[in-house]
Length: 304
Ligand code: CP
Image (cartoon, rainbow, N blue to C red; front, top):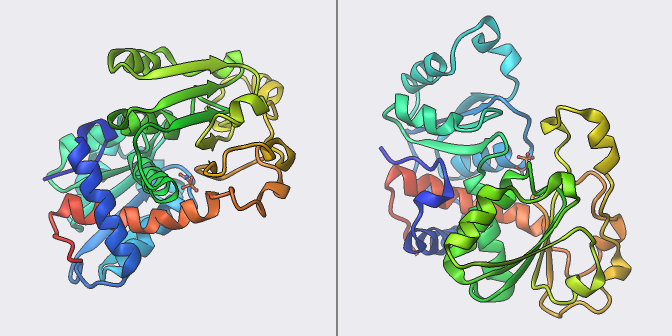
């Protein structure tokens, strides 16, 4: 079976095909191509957008959903292993969509079952369906994916969305600006990936208008409190960068502000009314991108 555990398993052609199918689903999201099929959403970590957009995607495609969003109500709280949970659920459904705090959990699941696994986030590692909706949002707002300057701001250490997005964008000649406090800098693994693929990046600790003004996509991120072992360190860095509307006054016309959400405090509410704010529409695009991903892993063709 075909799973989506990491964005690096997708070729450029795979990405462009999935984005094109997302476009078709945006034009018509109600298609009964999953009739008779059941998907499981196994969320061992909290979620609003990812779980609900996946479940909406299945419902709008005519399938059905079972699952949990609170693992403490499941037998994993009695000590059942992830392997056994996956094997049990595989008895019942055609597809598993899972989020887990352990990095590599989705890959492991894909190795113990024959049904497709979609990684809905594994620790600080990967969030490939988020990347697909981010790419769709970038393509839609910029009219292209190539030759863009993408500024990533905030928790670049623990933020799985930025880790995945670097890989997803690597096919399209991006220039990255990484803005993070020293404690939350982009890890070496991602910087080595950029070096290996000849991708340009700059690192900063200051979040300045000068950088914003040279940016096409401003990708804000939340400081990930749940990943800190030292909560005092979280308290020190939690409000390190806050985007305010007046910081955007000289930004490019095509600039769009993305954020995977949830936001805590990193985008002031006065930005929401700025036409360059795109994070709510971005989350909406998640529905279409996830419909396309589900069809991709199940081998279901998407008509125009
Ligand atoms: N972007 C994202 O993963 O949001 P949720 O945690 O609410 O699913």
